[in-house]
Image 1: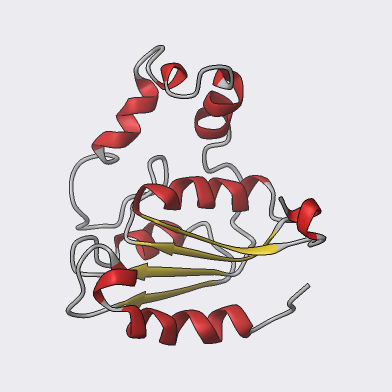
Image 2 (image 1 turned 30 degrees about the vertical axis):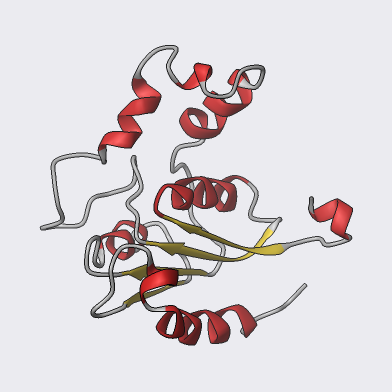
Length: 155
């Protein structure tokens, strides 16, 4: 898509179940990701915050551990799908400038998970906000996104 648009890099954002694929893209292909925004999620395989919820990753990460299940979702692209989620993990460092945004349901868990592996991380908690941040507090979200996405090199 970037090549078709004549762009070399892009800002990438993910919320909830979209945050892990955005994270993995930034880990695997930092040359394509200028800035990374992750919201209201936790990352399976990343460190858990002390005092954070639960013992282990959220249930949806177990989906990938069930033999054959993930392959039924994207018929014809099984190898790419499995490699994307299971083959990359959290090896290495997150070198892309990253903004972790939490709200009341997940809180600062994502920021705490990223802190040990991220070179350039800003974390924010939006108060009085439900899980779907763009719907619950769009103006508060934009007040964080605009300066973050405008800072640093744009190319």
